[in-house]
Structures are given as structure tokens and as C-alpha cells.
Image (cartoon, rainbow, N blue to C red; front, side):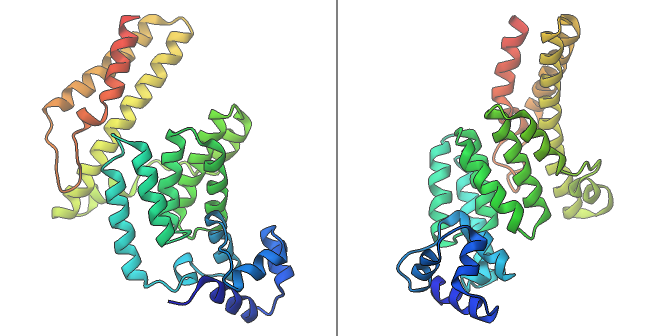
Length: 270
């Protein structure tokens, strides 16, 4: 596999630009670019997507990775980090950062990392990575998810207007790919889409009921707020009777909403 510095140098010469021009685009010194090309140092991981974007290649192409092989390996890394999502966010971060050492700038791993960093309160890094993804990724779903993560980070930092601005970049869509697939496909493909959409819709509905209830409570409409919390509680308890489809999930909605259930029980007691 060709070294990154050699690849950058080759791509730069193909575009017939100087180290100074390339450095100015990235906001670094031409000495930094020279060190990369000579193999003395590596670009920061958050700069990899911008470098790939500048040359019009994917991050995988930048590293001369076998695309099929990297997709399988990244999927395995995501599966591994997902096992620890409800248990240990620091372990999740460790797994993703190790993955990024193997596949620097990989869009999917960076997107997953922003979710973990949001949970850990590392908002500045979330915003830095999010901006990089927005500018460089070729995948709309990852770009919109980056805006979502950035909005969460801005809100946590108290930068409300910047959070609103980030949200404005996310399109309003009243249907999902999973929902359409469940309605139009057949057999196992229909079943898988319906199962996944069912769980996503249930978790989202619970979240919205809690948000509405809290708003009503803050505005003194206690009875209305109480009704929203009760509905949410009933939905979660109803999923206690559901089964987990182990081909697609590691837990039922009931387990996945355990923290929300505790929160609602507290809200109903107040």
C-alpha cells in the first residue's frame, strides 16, 4: 500500500499546484505539507476528509485501500463499538479511535465518533469533526447526521443560534427509506425494514412525548403534561411483551428505553 505522503505528493503534482497553494487551502504551513510528503509526519485525522475532498477522491482512495475490504472491516468495527454503547462510552471511543488509526478519515467511523463524543460532552471536537464531514463526505446521510451532531454540540455549549443554523441544513422528510421498504418490498426484506422502523418509531415517539410533557409542565399545564408521561409509560411497558429479533437487534425497545422509563417515573412522582 502506498504511503500517504507519497499519495499526497502524487495527487498534488497531478493537479500541478505548489505546496504553498495546497497548504493555504488547508490552513497549514507549506512546511507541514513538505513533512507529510517526506513521510516525517502525518496530517491530523480531522484533516484527512478535507485533503481527499481537495483532490476529488474518497478517503479510501487516498490511502489506496481495497474498497470492498475496508467496507467489511469498518462494518466489523462499528458492530464491535455498538456492543458497548449502553455500557461504556469510553470503550466505544477507544474502539473507534483504533479503527481510525487503521482507516484515517473514514466517514462512517468519524460519524460514529461524533455520537460518542456528544455523549461524553466533548462538544468542540464534535463540531470540528462535523464541519470536516459536512465539507468532504459524498454521502448525504452522513452529512445530515453531522449537522445533527453539530446542532447537539452547539446547544450544549449554549450557542442556540448556531444550533438552529445547523438544523436548517437538515431536510424535512415525512417518510423514511425503511418505511417505504416495509410498505413496498416483500418477504425478508419487508420484514427487516418493518422491524427496524418499528423500533426507531417507538423510541422517537417516547422521546417526543417526554419533550412535550416537560414543556407543558414548565408552562404550568400539569394535567396535559401528566397525560403525555402516562402515554409514554404505557408505550414502553407495552413493548415489554415484544420479542427481540436477534438478527437485527441486541435488545428490545423495552430495554433500550430503560433510562427514559426511569425518568418518566420520576416526572410522574413530582
